[in-house]
Image (cartoon, rainbow, N blue to C red; front, side, top):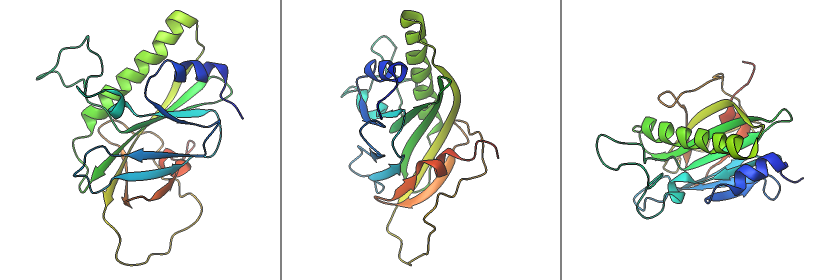
Length: 196
């Protein structure tokens, strides 16, 4: 399966793309902070019309979302989450999933999600303006994967995704899942039930 032309154009407009559903069935998210306990996670996506990018790494060594924007307090718009997965359906509607890895107690993520969300919306609107793109953001989901410590007790887990009940999340109220370092998580589980 290849990416649709519409989604490929969006992917090609970004410089920090990592994986896509035409070539991959999973996304590896890596935390760049060397002191992080939760260093990576694997999201099992399956193949399809999707791609991922890493805005945190894409900001470059100066950590800027855009050199056109002012830095420093009170401007906190240069923050970014670790991964964004963008999925397109047959009606050109996009589901955008913002994911951040946190070691220990998850906090301080709202600004990261807000800044990344505005960047994604801007990228989609640029394609509409300059290329008459039919893509529309229909759903946004915010996910925190936290923890990183190895579990001491062996726990039985199901092999099927366990979709949470939350249909919608927000930058300040993200779906949170505690995982050990290097854990594999089903995309359907973090996406939640659409019709819950």
